[in-house]
Image (cartoon, rainbow, N blue to C red; front, side, top):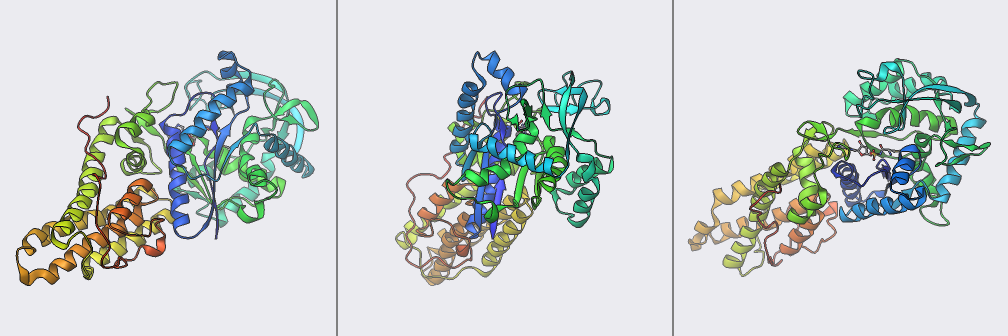
Length: 505
Ligand code: MSP
């Protein structure tokens, strides 16, 4: 099945922080997992470069918008690489191919009779790049940034969003899982029920953007331009090839709750207007917070992803973000919690289990898996974990997926304690039982590595190598217990997750 996964494209007004890493890693986990299951995945991320917010940051840096975007976009691209995201393309809205596509897209909307000229007068938050009404404001301030919006009065081209109310309502009626989790579906539906106003499709007072094809001294409103990236990318990501039929409609579009309305209301209407199918599902996550405040560069409460990676490794970051904060909800993150989760669950639960297993197989069975059978209770637990993990990822319940995997990690730890191989080794009559126990551990770790590979790709590869499994690409076909051949070697160069003594401050 074809499986197109997208992240929002990131504003280049400032450097990336952990909140951006979070969205990218979520989409990457889903993409990797679906590839393990043999799906035809295309994973897109990139940068959103037009609009007044970026133009102002460029001016403040003393650079032209293009020079500034080149610099900051490169930092986002580097983050993508450092997070080991397996994106198939990195789009920039300043790509000439994207700009041409945007012009063709809005021409299609216009051909549908959905575009007209009028005067916009109202409020605008540049940090959101969004228009607001008085009702949207909180104490007169932007509901997201808490800053005063600006008054804007200019001639704009408008998109007749109001004409799509019925069709959007029908979409939500027919597809109760169009938006997950449910609370966000309800919120999006409430927007629609509240009545939709037409929105600006262009801006007259801004220069940094895609020219309106029929009136080139206006530019396309940055959000219209940005949303179209999800379709434009497919037309030029592979030179000479149009991937649209293969991957559109997107299977999963991942985004934060702050940009729900753009994606759950405006974007489907734009697609309908231009004659495209709407995406299959929107997955909405909450905010990472630091002492309850949304993490953002401007608030200066940023948990630095690069420092976490330096001290604990990339896998620790990828694990922590979904283990500690329930995906979909908001949650506080801190260096102390990274530290505790790392030592408890990665270094102890998983890392020690692996070192103990390898050490015991080395000591009692010359470092190779004996021919034994998987303990039936452990086998059943591993099968349950694998099935539950996959089912949770299908619903984008990433935290629950990890929890399902950790049931097996904990079960194997209990199994070692209960069966005490060190005692069995003293009793020659227990040799066959020791074979079974050691085989169960070595094979069980292999299964766990396959299950969690999408979250912790490096650790999974290291575990597979340590238990002598040649299934290094962790195909889901290998998730069944008992597939490790007898004689597979058990060896480990150093600890999987070396303990860290001091948390970051
Ligand atoms: N450029 C727009 C998106 C256009 S998509 C067609 C934008 N960019 S952004 O850089 O501000 O945010 C991108 C994503 O990062 C959003 O999904 C947003 O929710 C997410 N996050 C930014 N800060 C965040 C946290 N503190 N926590 C979790 N995610 C956050 O919006």
